[in-house]
Image 1: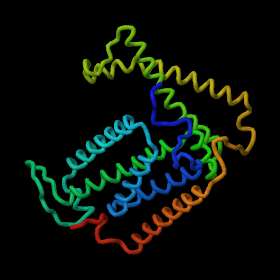
Image 2 (image 1 turned 135 degrees about the vertical axis):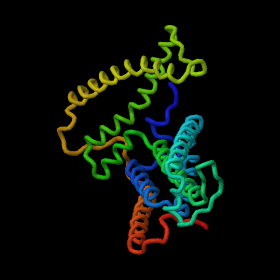
Image 3 (image 1 turned 60 degrees about the vertical axis):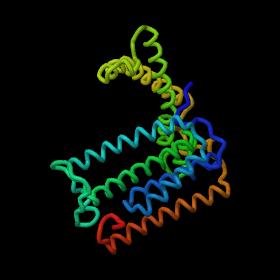
Image 4 (image 1 turned 30 degrees about the vertical axis):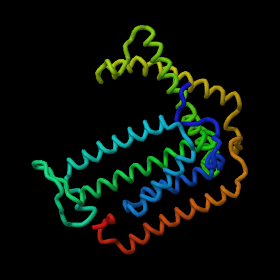
Length: 281
């Protein structure tokens, strides 16, 4: 079985040993912190901190690098399209001046637009790094226990847990079906096929995969009914344990980050800045 980005058993590192509630609180606080501003002075420290946290988890770097590369270039394409639609978009978010760096016929790249696109990329990658660190540090059961600890109904938590738990299984089923089709003579080597042919061949994988997924949903529903799931108003989770000193410390950090984020938003509403984005020029 190939190693997937979602873990079903807790890891050995310090962050893995935190409770699910603590991890969910940290994730929510840092995502809200990331979304609230385009200020590089706020985003860059969090990006570096998320990198340190990611290294501490000792993940499978092959999977992490592949995901990072894919997300980075997809965001880069998004920024290029954003710039093509409005080459002067940075002037609205930064200063009202226009300092041309390069010109390409009718298109131009100004210093203000380049800075805006750079910070936008940093913002997107920071949110991705925070999300990836969270996914690598938590298991589906801990995720459900953390959501339940924050007050969500446990039926919703169970749905979230099952969705995350079966993503690796679906990925493995995809690989198994792909190998079976190759054994029957279907060419699926991406080096020998064009994009249209690969998409067409993948339909032969997706159709049985979708059908098997519906069967799996029915089996899970029947198993839950047989165990009288949903009759009680409360439930406990084996994955959750008593909070340690580290949990109390990181929960305090999460609350402090949220309070700082609300204070930052409130201050900018009371005293609007000259520009929507901080610039060094």
